[in-house]
Length: 610
Image (cartoon, rainbow, N blue to C red; front, side, top):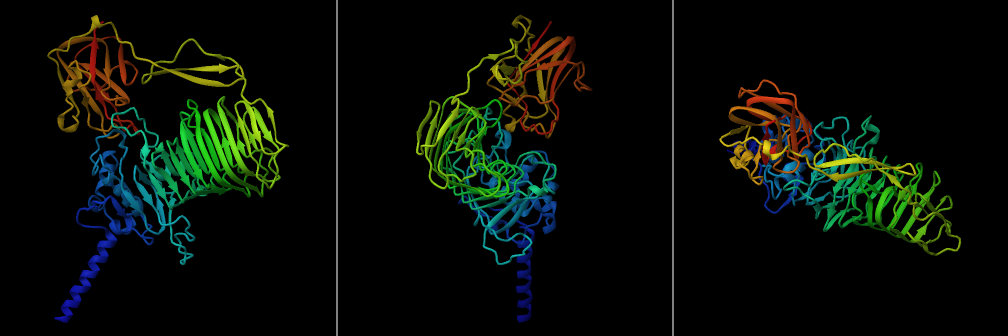
């Protein structure tokens, strides 16, 4: 009897080991507290820094092991088998984020663009982990154990200090993720003019991670690669006690901040800035407490517009900055491009230059007519050439190895703590004149642009709202009695095809399908032959218009090919035929197009005769 009990005991122990190694056979259950420890729920640990395939997972096991992430993946139209080439760490992390989303729930996606609103607290274990897709973040809290991991995954230093490191695996990076980011905001780069879109990543907390970019292994990759992307973090948002090192881009990439805190983080040996602050409206409110780092080729802190059409700026308060240059020149604070209202307050800075000399501590090639730089206690070194610089003026002087303070604003140098400080050049750039062409570009997605030239040789792009002008209303074809069919209907049949011609723009037909997954279409049966000169399609939801549109008009309800048409506009789309065309059926198709994740919707379609 004892022998039988021993066999049973060994069998149970072996079963538990296999279950912990291979993943659960039963459907995944999530804690209802919102707190998920990856080690407890997904059995992630430092000895499992491997892809799922090498850990023995099969495609059949994925829905039970990572049900929410699998549904997220399949909703994009991506092959489920590709998940086997991702690491256990990122699959567990992303499954936890999707499963705890307060709006989506278990991969049932009804908000455009897959922007998540998870408020979970994800806790990562000790260990060094690689990623090929990255770990998504939303509105929650994301905690590692410590930023200082003094070993690597080789185990060369088994007695290392505990901590959590996340490393980019460039060689096996997933083609489904264009950005190579360890911790990626799901709201990153999204267009918020959509119903249900998320305008801010509010209340996000990221803490205690070491983020590793492997820039030497990036090869010819030229896209975004950074430790963290934060999209408009605001209202109780903070990144704290992290280290970001060796990225092909910036250590941290942060768009706006309303307000946002960086607390005691460091950046080392990144090809871009250590901390890259991108702005679009000059309204940022960011506090950076005790930032530090060495040899970042793009300087330690960079403040700049996100693109040529934006202005940077806002209020930045930087305290106790430590900037070291050993083999690469690293300026402590660089400001680039057009600034709006810039208020920069620096309270304490140590800048040490063992290697190349530094041409300035604060500033750069920036322009702006409303600004103030308030600096206190700047400890410069003897091989520093200037305290501050703009595109038109330079502040020199100061006492090396001692605190230096000044206030420099759009009226000049208002205060200086040292008699030898002097301001040269013009504080505000010359006004000059702009020459703009009289005509604008074609109306695209409700906007048209033109490029203006300045007397100083610079250019700027202006934009204005526009609408596609339809033909006279007297040429409208009546749609009474028409029948409308479509490839699919969204939300359990609540967005019906007939809503596209019911005369009510507020009622919408929706394909219910992502355009990168299927060709979505809507077809109108006029019952008798009609002569079409043009048509307009108003998207039911902003940005959910037909990508790569194709038009068919003919006598058959089964189209063989499209016909030639001029298509302008997007959210308000105008379709014009070179010569009138005849047919009973009119079909508009959104052809497959990689990267288009919006649905295809029609609020109202109108047809015109010659």
